[in-house]
Structures are given as C-alpha cells and as structure tokens.
Image (tube, rainbow, N blue to C red):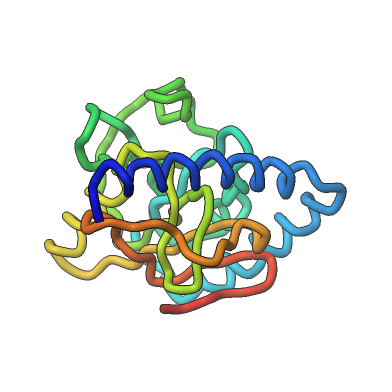
Length: 190
C-alpha cells in the first residue's frame, strides 16, 4: 500500500480515536472503570516484581496507571523524549518526586537519572485484537520497543479503557505489537 495512503489512514484513525477516548474518559463511570483497570494492571505487574517498570505520567485523556505503578514491587521510571524521531529514554521515578514539564507536556522527573526498563506500560489512543496500538504518531514507543527487543527480553503492556478497542489499527512495517493489553475488563495476551 502506498505510504501516503497509510499515513492518511493513520491520521483519520487518530482523529476518531481521540474523539472516542474523550467520550470514554468523560463517562460517568470512568473513575470506577479506571480503578478496575488499575486493579487488573496491579495483578499483572505482581508477576514482574523486581523488574524495572516504565510507566507514564498521564496527559490529556489517557487512563492513569499511577495507582498500579505506585504499588509495583520494583524500580520505576517514566519516558523522556530527548529528540524527535528517536527512541525514548527512561528516567528513574518515585512517588512524590519533583517533576517538571518535558516535551509534549508530559511530566518527567526534575533529576534525570536514566535506567533501562524490562516492563513497559504503554499509553495508546486505540488498540485492536491483534495487539497493535495506535499512538500519537511520533513513533517513539515503536522505536523504543524495537531497540529493547533487539537488546533482550522486554514486555510491553498496553493500558486503556475497553472502549478504546477498534476493529483494526492501521499499521505499517515500523509498528511494534504489544505483548498484552490491560483494561477494566481484564488482560488480553498476544
């Protein structure tokens, strides 16, 4: 398929996914569904005790993984964008750490001590039953997962509301699949 057609498909899918996620995020029962999703995520993360976990600081209408992150039995880190079109780096994080605004408005630790995670909680706009995610279009997580997978074992866990599932996410050769997706309904493993 022509690259321009694929780019147009992804742009249209992102627009629809942003709108759908906003509706799900703003629903009356969103708080309870987010709590249920965090409980499922905590149960999954219990199997990764002692691993370095990369979470994320939620922004816009992203579901917050902070409750599950703060309960993790192991080191924590969050993504840092260091330059366009590059893999993410991960700064050590602890609950209550002094934070500052990083690229694209995501908060990052004021003290950047970089670590390498073996488990990642990955934000997304939409996901499908094949384990693919639709991100924001920068390719940061795809580049990061490709590099981490080439260097050794890493587990990528998408975190979302069940209402963010779509029939099929448009993908190209650069898109990296997730190993599992956790929602308020439980965990899908691929």
